[in-house]
Amino acid sequence: MTSYTKRTHTCGELREIHIGQTVTVTGWVDVRRDLGGVVFIDLRDRYGKTQVVFAPQHDITAYEKAQSLRSEYVISVTGKVERRPVGTENPELPTGTIDITAMELQILNKAETPPFPIEDAIDVSEELRLKYRYLDLRRPMMQRNLLARHRFYQITRAYYDRHGFIEVETPILMKSTPEGARDFLVPSRIHRGKFYALPQSPQTYKQILMVAGYDRYFQIVKCFRDEDLRADRQPEFTQIDVEMSFVDENDVLATTEGLIAELWSGILNVDVKVPFHRLTYKEAMEKYGSDKPDTRFRLEIADCSDIVAKSSFRIFSETVAQGGVVAGFAVPGQATITRNQLDGLTDLAKSLGAGGLVYVRVTDEKVESSVDKFVSPEEVKSIASRIGAKAGDLGLLISGPWQKALSILGSLRLEMANRLNLIPKGKWNFLWVTDFPLLEYSEEEKRFVAVHHPFTSPKPEDAGLLDTDPLKARARAYDLVLNGNEIAGGSIRIYNSELQSKMFGLLGIGPEEAKAKFGFLLEAFKYGAPPHGGIAYGVDRMVMLMTGMKSIRDVMAFPKTSSGLSLMDDSPSAVDEKQLKELHIRTI
Image 1 (spheres, rainbow, N blue to C red):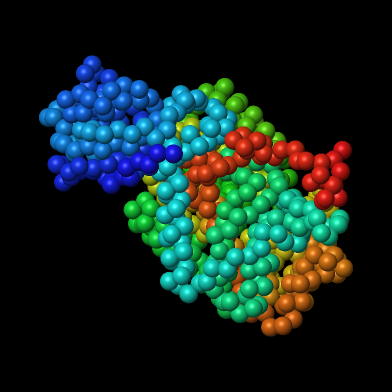
Image 2 (image 1 turned 30 degrees about the vertical axis):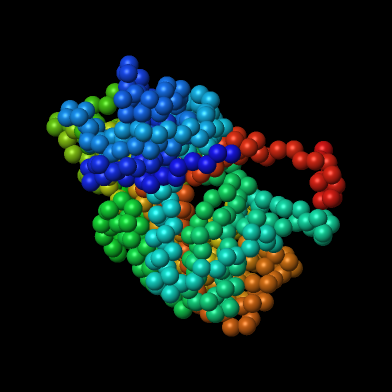
């Protein structure tokens, strides 16, 4: 193995102040241009690009070697920094006013022709990019994304350290306590027939740390869920996990807002205004049809139930009588929408579970609806006024059970905003959604399930409802929403053994099962557990939004495909029969 001249500067560092200096740069050949008697190359590393000039009059040996250079060769070049001739500058590059006149060239490693160009604007499948991820990661865009992620981590650690939090690592091999998504299980070789689980979150551990007296904890941690995947979901993902003792909701929210402001300032140079707007779950659903509303545009929903409660149109009146809702929103300037387009919206509403879609058109002359045969003109006018539909506007209405009808309207709201390009770019709308329901009833499982998780505390004034009407109990839970994306969520926790046992009972977890799954936590609560609460941020999703990517796979170094495969190293893969035997496992 031959030695080589180490670099004195990176490929993104040289400027006019370096003119006249002899320097050494190293990196990958990005582009080679032979102009007959002179060879130009752009040399690339993660810091940028520098143009290098090989000419026989400068060094014949270096020039002759340069004839063999190809894309992605790894080289070391020593030469003199010179100003580029007038008219040949490249204003798009920070190094675009200089080049290096090569005096020495060392080819450190040759490279085969890559399966796709190492540049941002490439039209290749994601599968090919993931198979050759080490090449994909050389692209400037991917390097910018990972550098942004690095900066994200540094700001986070500095912020929490400055505010008295300590970083504590929690186990990756833990007890299986399935609740929500499936666990990834790890068989024990030593303890035959027993399994560890990979953590879906460090929830129980961070609560134990509060009992142990570490009142301000944080961790940047890997979590694992064996669930169906999509663009913003991976089997392994990263959270910022935070827990605090002797706090209420306002303390957690204010601390979170401080970090968000520093992240957006430090990475995007964006001034985020705090405190963030807050909506209760009920307000978010009734106004936007979503518990993670995008507030960058209007199209706000209005409840019209009182207007049609006595309507002769039985679909409306019976829905209201049964406790449902009739609601809708106005779409500005869309009164002239075609019948085919309305049919398409109706089909969309039906695919989301609606029985149908009612529309209202407002013109200078009249207000009409798709149910004029059944609804009085006065009711139609009142509906148009309630949803804020003016001349030239279209109103869309859905009727049905409260949550279902509003959720469908929320989806229609987003669909119309996308169709009409109503969502502004470069806007960062943060908001908190609070006061979620504590429980919901699963028809599939025929039992209550936790909306957040089983350790979430009910609001003190709703604690009595756990004995009388559990579905009306509200949680001390909160989600942080950005532009229609949930980016963090948490709650004030239960810290009392009796209340925690009651919660387990409501969830159908009996005393024996609770002891088997969570006995260590219930036992810990008996020894002086402080009031505590916390939050967890979705790092991958946050960096995806900050960098403008469409998938979290573009902000992770080595992600899996949508089916959970790692194409680069071909995992998951078969293992040796001997390994299975040691683990007491037999495949079928």
